[in-house]
Amino acid sequence: MIRKRSRRFGVLSAFLVIVALFPLAFSASPSAAGSLCGTVRDAATSAPVANAGVFLRETGGAYTGLSGATNAAGAFCINFVPPGIYDLEVLVDDYRVGYLRDILVTGAVTDVPVDLVGLGLSLRRPYPSPAETHVTLSWHMPSAASARLLVFDARGRLVSAWASPSLSSGEKQVVWDLRDQRGVRVPAGVYYLRLESGTERRMRRFVCLP
Image 1 (tube, one colour):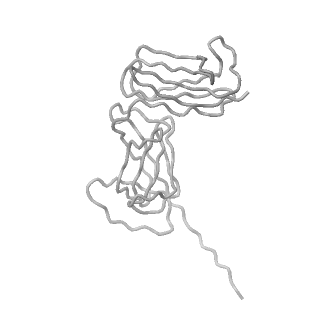
Image 2 (spheres, rainbow, N blue to C red):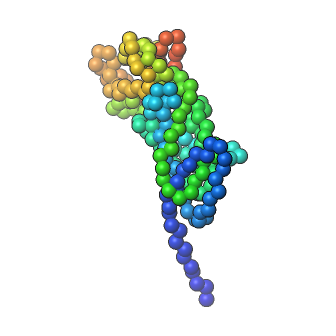
């Protein structure tokens, strides 16, 4: 007769410590798993960085398959993380802008500060895309400056625009209702978003549905 045995694995939260100078010894149950949570900010302005990808890697560089993304407040959480020592990679617009090494995971949750140095002018992917009723247009200003945000259709015609002679540094956002400068709903199709500040330009593509 074969007896089926069931095991219960407790799910514990994880405690994250960034080890800057030396590794720490620890012990934890092999079945324990938890969450790594933190906040990503611009090191120069302390402004939260939204829509950043956060990826957990082994200390040898291999990707663990665990990742998260920051919300509008710059906060993120990566769940189901086994105890161990990891590296944390932060990407903004597909470019690596931060890398934290020797992160020790044990058995509690804490907020992890991630300061990004040298985050320049960046234009986020419009969300959602495809868009049906509205689309959120977000970008990052590395310093106070003038800026223009322009939307063009697939034929290169200007559809909508926003401009400011002086914007403070940090994360910026515009919610567009998919109406042109005359107040008419734009047709379905491909559109292009362009951010201009000083001599710099950034472009993004997105789609509108009927």
